[in-house]
Length: 87
Image (cartoon, rainbow, N blue to C red; front, side, top):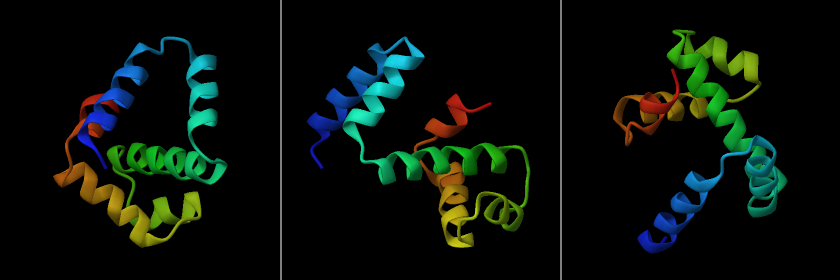
């Protein structure tokens, strides 16, 4: 994926200040399954940051342990965006 396009998308997202507009934008730009995946990924990271064990997170959100493991790796080794935004 082009860095230029990612930069532009990031800029557009930072301009959104209204919750309803943000939701509408996400619904417009993502398919329903992509939106579901991304919102679930956010919940995974939030639960992991609270110290909930990976298996419990997987069971609670009805996702595979591998999916939760990916979230855990992003928290530990990723670009640290989750750690800076999600408290």
